[in-house]
Structure formats: C-alpha cells, structure tokens
Amino acid sequence: MPIPFKTVTSIPLLQGLDDDTLNKVANMMVSRAYLPNDVVMRKGNSTDNLGFLLRGVLQVVDLSEDGRETGIHLIEPGNSFGELAVIDGLPRSASVIALKSSEVAFLPNAQARSLIFNRPLVAERMLRHFAKALRTSTHQRTLLGLPNAFHRVFAQLHSLVRETPQGMVIELPKQHEVAIMVNTSRETVSRALHTLIKLNVIEKKGTVLIVHQPAQLKSAAESGLEELSDLKSNKSGM
Image (cartoon, rainbow, N blue to C red):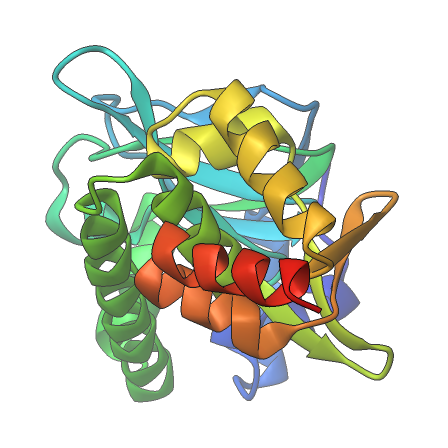
C-alpha cells in the first residue's frame, strides 16, 4: 500500500528534506506487513529496494558454518536496512526476519541510490548509520567469542538495557531469539535468566525485565559466572 506523506517525514534518514522530494519519495514507496518469523530479506537475493521499518522489530541473521542461525543485530522502528546491497549492487549479505508483527516501507533501488549519492544530508546520516552498525557488529563478534554460554547471555542482556522513567528495563526478545543472538540453546538462555532472577538482579514482568541491580548485571556481562558466584556467596552469608 502507498506510504502517507506524514509517515515519510517521520523517517530519520529523510527528515529535513524539502517537501517536493519527500512527496516524490512517498509516491515511490510501498509498505508490506509481516508476521513473526517471516523473511523480509533473504541472503543472496538480488537488490531491488531499501527497507525502512515503520513498526515492529526485525533481526538481521546469518548462517554459521555448522548451519546455525546467528543474530547480528536488531532493527528498530525508524531504522533503514539493506543499504550495502543498494550501494554496491551485490546480493544481500544477510537475511532479515520479523521478530514481531511488523510493517516495512520499501524504496526502489534507483531512487534510494539517488538520495544517498546526491543529498549530502542523507549521505552524512548513512555514514553515521554505517559507523553505528560497524560498532554493533564488532561488539557482537566480541560477544560471540566468549567461551562460556552463560557469559554470552549476560553480555547480550546487558546490551539490551534501556533507561526509562520507571528505571532500567530490558524489552525481552523471545528466548529462542536471544539464543540465536549468542549462538546457544534456548534452554541455556532459560537457565541464565533463572539465575539472574533468583539473585534478584532482574525481575520478569510480562515481556519486560526490570533490572534491579544494574551494576551486578554489568559485572556479570564483563566477568561472567565468576561475578555471580561472588554475589551468591554474599547472599548466602547474609
């Protein structure tokens, strides 16, 4: 379906462009709805558009050598994706799947390239986006290099902490989604979460984790089970 002009003006990459350009972009875009686990983009496919997430949550995934899905990073509303293939014309370098019911707007490749190459404001934002993505990718590779699965789960959870007026929270993805992010089993994720809950580091409320002890979660993310062993000892001695 077509994209309303107001929706286009809310996309961070396009904000500040003149109304004539935004109207043209809106007329060229189409949106599609996706259900959880739907494939939005598939690795190896040819390039034909640039995606913008309007609502929902997406995950960029790749396959490891042993055939396991490995989560690279999450895509949140307002973010664009698929830029590399748009810029260099090569096949998609990773797949994108929907974690929740999502709506995505697509801008055809030719128009996306014109904006990126001919509009300095868009080009600057795209460079900042690539810099952030590179930092995220570097962090994720470091995380996946941790030998202990519990440690990887703690580090991933810490990276998802957000500060809100109600305190520090984690909008918890499903356990199998966390498992994909850190290359472990859903059962391991469940046990790691239970350990943190038992020690009152976090509390589960629906799909949200309330972080009661941010410093302890940070220490667990940095030191793994050793830090939690110290916390257990302190609690047992009280």
